[in-house]
Image 1 (cartoon, one colour):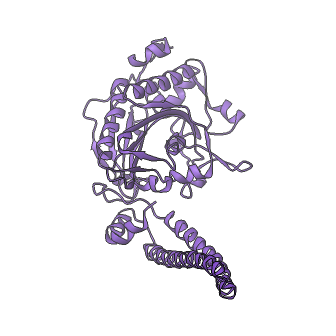
Image 2 (cartoon, helix red, strand yellow):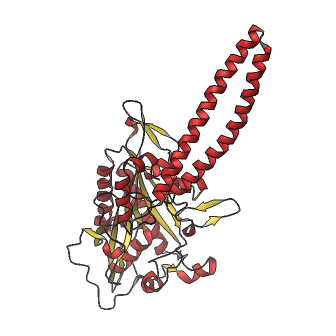
Length: 424
């Protein structure tokens, strides 16, 4: 979340950023600053009572030592009144802090200056276009949901039986292809210096709030109400929270982490032909890369992450482009986001397969993730994350773009993992 001091000293910049996001109402900023003023006022009163009480307690001891019992008892009576005042002030202070935080949680991150203006995905900017020919498919080419049924790679109907719509069951060579992609993505991440983690697949409310899933996306997460836990929508949530309430040193940077996990998303309201097959599901696999960086290096790190994700698609030989998201299409917590889209020749459309984002200090302020600078002053770190990669649409793109009359050819880089060259 944004820091109140940042809002106070950069109010015009904050307003301009929120307008780029089409955020309303902007009057919330005045409410935040008013509550912050009240918080400071109450804190000053608490500090004064604390100081007066400490001084009085010291004086009481001195008066008793002198034998001036009557005066000491008068001061004791005053201290008792201060104690009661302090309790009331503390209650009011905590209530103001709670209300202040609740308002701050409603305000999204401020977009980076390069973020384009816009309201919908149609306003996103093509950062890197695909300039080579698309794969040429044979005349009887099919979309992936037909191919996966034909070659017995996945069963959507069985998923409905076991769980419900949007929970695919992979089998045979389809399951092996899935496993091969996970291993390949993890191996490439560790080669690039990322430390692999296997995180829990459920998190508590503090973790979900720390990375911004709460209170913004509670309707999109599966909530285990009996234990008050949330199924993770991405490994970003538990992995980033490893460093919640941690104070780093400058020489700890960069921190690079990767994790495979299943991801669970309700995706409420998603219907139509554009979500057929693997285009949109409620449970899917993904390898995530997460970085914690010094603020001066975070945008260089973002560029490195873009290069890493691009190299995976280059090696898989899938046509892709990179979009820079506009203010209206960015995630709540992001300062700058790039989306990777792979072209499905069979469907004749682009499919999003990765988002790579820099959150600057927005998450770290919630997480209280700080580092000590050279002057031993505590500063907020920058956090970044990216899909490297999300599997459903990668699988769909491979099956569609690599189809031949003889079967589905396996990309060369995956063959050491699948142990087969073609699905037929």
